[in-house]
Amino acid sequence: MIKAKTKHLLSLATALGMLLIATSCNSGAEKEEAVVAAADSVTEVKQEAVNFLYPATLASDWKPGDPQNIVKIQEIYKIMLSDSNYEATLPYFGDSITNVTFDNRKVRVSKEEFLELVKKFRKGFKTLDEEFRSYVVMRSDALKSEMVMLWLKEKGTRLSGRVDSSGYQETWRFNDQGKIDYRSTFVRYDF
Image 1 (tube, one colour):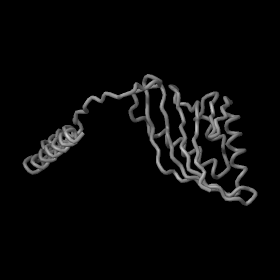
Image 2 (cartoon, rainbow, N blue to C red):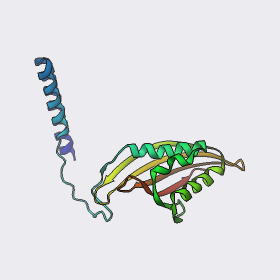
Image 3 (cartoon, rainbow, N blue to C red):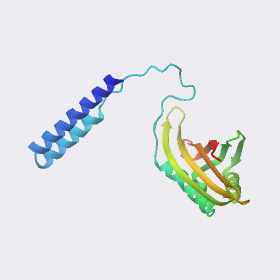
Image 4 (cartoon, rainbow, N blue to C red):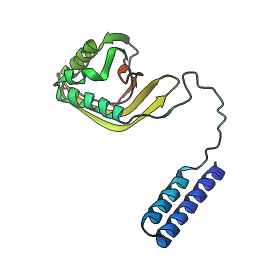
């Protein structure tokens, strides 16, 4: 691990040195080409092969996905928090969605039914706030899908006046047509 980091730092230092020399010696178009060449050499850091102890049974070809899919999930949340215009998110969904709740209840519903479940959830709160702690989107070509993973902090006041707080992790899957067809969640209550 230290050897790999050292190689990476040396490659980075070399590229930065090339960049400094290129910018001080060249002018005009030559300077731009040298800067691009130096920047390209920074990204050419070789990854050492990793021998995992256990094989991945779902997929092992994960790579960064389309960040716009994170924005789509955030738009769903924004609409839910404002409790309005749910239908605006219909184009994001496939014809049906598998939804797995924190208590392991699994249902397969139409996109319209899914939004009714979201509305019903929201109607249980006087106030509701979601803090997006972190998020990432990953793509698997083998699975022909992308997964958006969110880590959230939720605070809400129920209709009864009881205040709830929870931390949770959600996974939203976008199928090969770019439509949401799966959502699951894991929750830890903080109260």
